[in-house]
Amino acid sequence: MTAPVLSVRGLTVDLPKSGDRPHAVRDLSFDIHPNEIVCVVGESGSGKSVTAFTAMGLLPKALKPSAGQMLFEGQDLLKMSRRAHGALRGKRIAMVFQEPMTALNPCFTVGDQIEEIFKAHTNLSKAERKAKTMALLEEVRLPDPPRVYASFPHQLSGGQRQRIVIAIALAMDPTLLIADEPTTALDVTTQAQILSMFKTLKTTHNAGILFVTHDFDVVAEIADRVVVMQKGVVVEQGPVEEVLNRPQHPYTRQLIAAVPRKRDGAAPVLDEEIALRVQGLEKTYHVAGTLTKKPRTVHALHPADFTVRKGETLGIVGESGSGKTTLVRCLIRLLDPDDGAIWIGNRNFAEGSRDSLRAARKDIQIVFQDPYGSLNPRRTIGEQLIGAPMNFGVGRDVAWERARRLMKIVRLEEEALYRYPAQFSGGQRQRICIARALMVEPKILIADEAVSALDVSVQKEVLQLLADIKRDMGLTILFITHDLRVAAQICDNLIVMSKGRIVERGTVDDVFGNPQDAYTRQLLGAMPGRGWEAPDLTGAPH
Image (cartoon, rainbow, N blue to C red; front, side, top):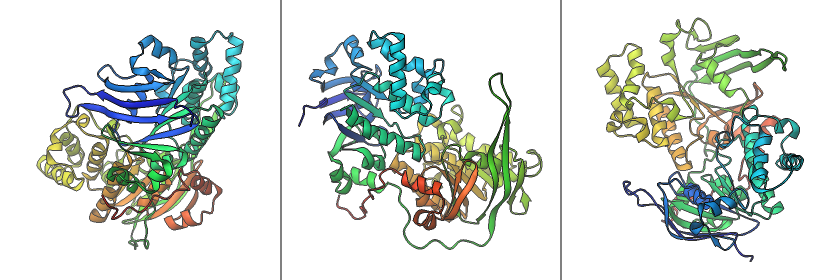
């Protein structure tokens, strides 16, 4: 075998002494060879990103490598000067960051930002820089390269921005490419395209790729070898087939067991009572013209009709721009629909002013995607929970008693009520948001991409929590997601949306087993790891 591009030996990175854990990474060792993708897998806090940032020389000052080696083409990156390491960065070692919008400068065009790499590392003329930039845009399969070249980041979609970040990383044909969760926030079809691109790049550029992820479906799709990390320590590593199909360590088995999968067994018997009836709901936006663009009309939601029975979990599935969010915002009257009816019991929620519907708002509540952005960082959890029922006339003492009861239901300690959002993990914050939505005892709960930003094991816990709450409290749930596997795990029935229209509906078994619409088949075909089925590890030895 050829010499490794990167050889990590006994790497230890210290954490500040004030914490309970002394090391972010401890005694880490692995190799990456040319034309190989090594996936480093683990949950938040496992040390994955610290490893990637150490290789790039981008560690925060509070974190210090204290032992070991990171040999890149025979040179120890840990012993290099900042200037020498900086000369490699972007030229021989490049990185694709998780969030492209924050990785790109909003004040400069895409063309300027790609050409900046050539300015820093070459003596190419402006014409030569532009020619290479246009070639890169074509290589990462961006449509209409001249338009993209002249665009600013906010004028492109999330998938297009991620391709731009990849193009910047490839500009100098690096030997080592590091990708830190580059597909986490992407739709399933865009994710499939990006993963396909990485598989192509390792061959066309003969690069070694360090791919950081928490998603075993992604691992199954692209990895050659896998390194599993937990709390800064490697607990298992080996060829992808071995780790995925015959995991040895309990933590690896735990992560694989948490991969969402379609429920087995007969479909549950649902109540005949209708909890929500939507008839002809639609929303159109009229976008004003500018000096360079004509006015246009955007049909964000074409007439939508569906019913949800009491106790049902209805999944609404589709990519960005499919109309899911517009539908949800109309249902809770954050947007006023242009036409149609929203029947909750005997009340048409689509009619009347928002003020006149104030009392009815407690019947339908929502849990948003980003729990940290949904909570006020300056108020305790308890104060945020009791605010909603008090707005509807519930006394303070009764509201506090309800908050204490809900802490038990969402499996948090009562003392959490006296702490602030920053003192909780992402999964704990999402549990708090669920509790806050339940404080007014709603009939319908909407979960809008409520688990998409969570680690796979935390995601499993939150999904189980929602299922338990639905059973115990008789809730009706609308579950909005772009992840078909997650939808299959929790939902009874599915609606598939595309370009503002409902293109398919049916039970989970019908949609997965016999999809009728081409768009549904496209979504199913784009799911990562579709050639791999997570093994049933129930009762596996520990």
